[in-house]
Image 1 (cartoon, rainbow, N blue to C red):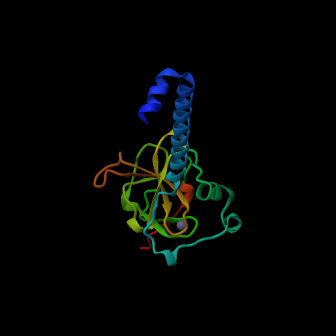
Image 2 (image 1 turned 120 degrees about the vertical axis):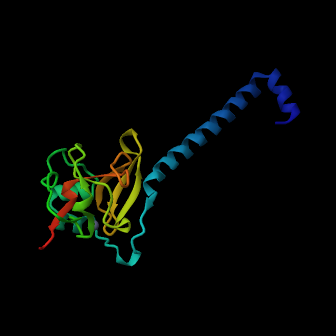
Image 3 (image 1 turned 180 degrees about the vertical axis):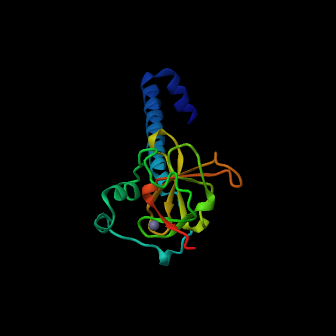
Length: 183
Ligand SMILES: [Zn+2]
């Protein structure tokens, strides 16, 4: 701001008005940038699964292959009602695979009773099989977990889990199929 401008500002209300408008424009710009940044949160996906092995299908293909409720959870990021999954109390030994593409996701040995009403695990079978994304929906920031091969929504991961990782993978049972270990 030049000295003259400053000087006039003190004298003339018109210059004061111009200055206020400048401030208003600056804050609108900041607000717009903030909103744009907010929308980018969803793009912050961390996925290390090999690009050439990923599965991409159209919405109509997924709709055909999945049941209505699987489509709602896996493709529309839905959440099943708590305490409704058949897998919640499953204590059998085996592997939990993605209900959409059958990629192995969790092992029974890492399943624990969280009391939340959703199947819970303290770590994935292989870190590379589970992708993470920042999820700012519902006025909180959570970490969404997805099948790294088909992008299917699985649930969320929280940092209040048991040893040895301290993580709690809170997973929709509908997003999983259980493959019992053959003896
Ligand atoms: Zn999958």
